[in-house]
Structures are given as C-alpha cells and as structure tokens.
Image (cartoon, rainbow, N blue to C red; front, top):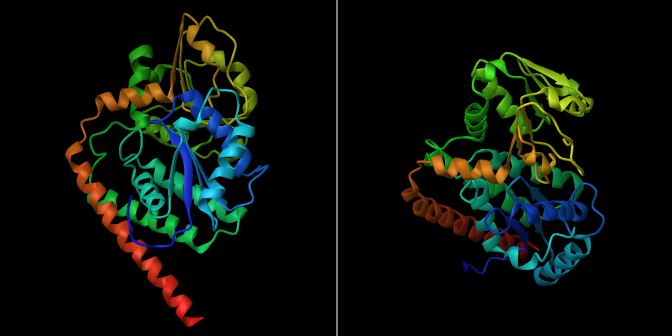
Length: 335
C-alpha cells in the first residue's frame, strides 16, 4: 500500500478477467448497471461505472469509504443475478491505491490485451457519463483526469502494444481460418460500438467493400462500404457467414439454429449471442475470453518493460497525490 498521507476520498469495487470468469463478469455488469449506471435504482453516493468486456468497476466517493464500500457490497448482493458466490472474486482499493489502480487501467497495464488502446477511451467515456449523472467531488475529477493523463504518458513513452495483435486482427485471422477468403463472405456487425467501428475500418482496409451493421440507430452509421440495418436484420442472421456482436442487451439477440456454416464472435458482456449456438455442427462461436487467449498466445510484446512502466506510473501517482494534498492544505489555509 502506498503511503503519502494524502486525503483522496475515492474507492473502487470491481472484478475483471483476472479475478472472475465470464459468467460472473456478466452478473457483475448487470448488477453494477442497476446500481450506478444510467438506470440506477439505489446508491446515494457519486459513482463512476466503468464496464467493459473484461471488467466492471464502480468508483465511489464519500467521507467514510469503508462504510460506503459495505453499503455497495450489500446492494450488489440484493441485485445479484444468480451466478454463484462472488465476494471473493472482487477487489477493492481506497485513496491513493485506487488512484494507482485507475492509472494502471487507463494505461492498459491491467488489460487482458496488454496496452490495448480502447480502455483509455472507455475510461474517458465512463467519467464523462458520470459527470452528466452526478455532481462529482473534486477528488474524483482529479483522480480521473490525472489517471487519463498518466495513462497517455505511459503509452507515449513505451511501445508495449507494438507487436501485439489487435482485437480486429484477431477476429480477422480466426475468421479466415474457418471461412477462407472473407471477401467472398457475407459479414454482419451487431452494434455501433467503438469495437465494431474499429473492426469496420479494419475490414475496409483489408478490401472488404460490402458488409452490414445492425444497430438501434442506423442513421448514425457512416462508414465506407458499410450498409446500415436496424435490429430487425438480426432475424435474418442465418443469412450471414461472419457475425461480430459487440453491443449491449438484456437478452440474447442471436439464437435459433442454421444449417449453414457460420463463424460468430460475441465480444459483448453480458453476452448477446446464445452460447448454445456453439453446439450447432456448422457454427463456430468465440466469446471475448477465447479471443483474448488467442491474442495473448500470439503476443510477442517486450514484457521486460512492464516493471519500468509500473515504477514510472507509481512515481507520477505519488507526485500528483502530493500535489492534491498541497492544494487542499492551501485551500484550508485561505479559509
């Protein structure tokens, strides 16, 4: 535990790909969304909900972090979808340790795909959304803004992800292994998410001149070669050879059966493709954990840089925490 005497009234409760299986991550994503998301049912304290395919974390602030942590844990138990015991899979950090953790997350050092860049945007979006929903205290603004800055610094100084396959590359390679030339295949992306937009641009770069994207708002799709479709297109999913689902939903969007050959990628958490489709004789279904495992097997990143990255991150967090303490002391002296 870091020691600076700094008063940062912020904590985090969460789980990720290292502490919990996909089933538990799905349950946590649903429970956390009910508590701290846009449709929050209960939790009186300001929160930032960071929910991705590999982690769900609730950042919170109060004068009594331990008591608030207990309240949050009790609320999660009430809203938990039956997926077995979960408490031992959770991790918690408070004060400067929370600051350090968020810095590692924003830098991609805690990601399933080391140094992946998508997490930086996800942290930024989660923080911006919380600013719209809550009146966040100064310590939360400070920790999130500075964590994003430190994460950017780590990325600019180190090329950790230079030789690591991206999620788009993984989808491309795994699909080609099963389907061959993808230019001759019908492709459907489900969801206008950042992940699917990245995959869409990747497809265009690889010479795929026609594919479809099914989304709630087809008018928002503006990608070369991409034909917007509404969600009714999912009723015809069996007409497509390759489908990538990266979206949100409370129930499965793809289900049923088909006699054709299909390769399906469910990159959503909670999952939006019925897992039983993997039992179909002509269907190959990959979930986010399986794709991450493939990427990590292929990765040739220089892992010896990680300790140095962590040390630079730690030094920056300590410096910034001291600066925040000095700011509070100066403000107190004025008043």
